Length: 153
Image 1: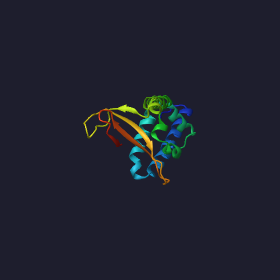
Image 2: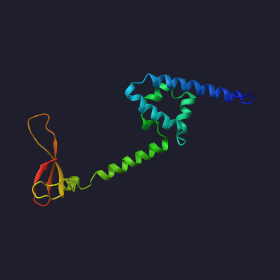
Image 3: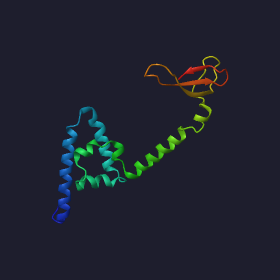
């Protein structure tokens, strides 16, 4: 740094260097199998221009190096990206839940192929086997719409 750099900038650079050293020390103590993934996640999220909050939290000291390394890549992501991912999950959940599941006892799909007739359209439904064992569970069945063959999925 030259003589024309302000004192505030020098303090900022020294804080940045101190945080960098502490992150490096914490990262070097991470288990070998998680080192590469953590390093890549940190590199991507700290360099991301759309994620200034993570850098500011780290430099201000509100997020220490140990806490930073405990964050998952999803938690490190920018707030806008986290919001978008949440919306995607909600949309996919709405698409997966079939409103006719309870009414008709299942839904029709082409995911399975009938071994008897070769048909690809089947109705998927769940049944709970009532028995004496405490481990009885709901089972998922598919029924061919052509020949009415039924099998467990």
